[in-house]
Image 1: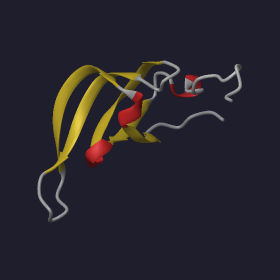
Image 2 (image 1 turned 180 degrees about the vertical axis):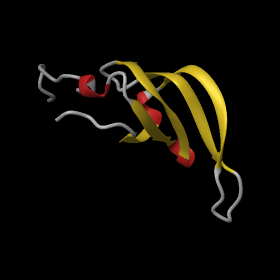
Image 3 (image 1 turned 90 degrees about the horizontal axis):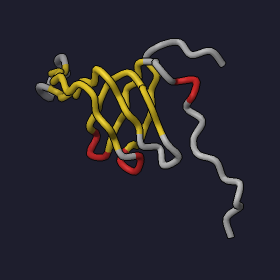
Length: 86
């Protein structure tokens, strides 16, 4: 039986920071974290979808998305692109 005092993720220190999220299917989205909930659903602002151009290791193509909500169960990795105080 799960404890009744289970909290959601503690992402407060990442608020207003630029993040790169890796999603299912190895898709990558970069944006500024504006909100989250207990299910790890996140709201990113100024989001950009990074798509690889070619297999030769060239620059990624960036497609501007704007504001986006991403379901928590599709996020496989968080990476901060700015310094975060511990």
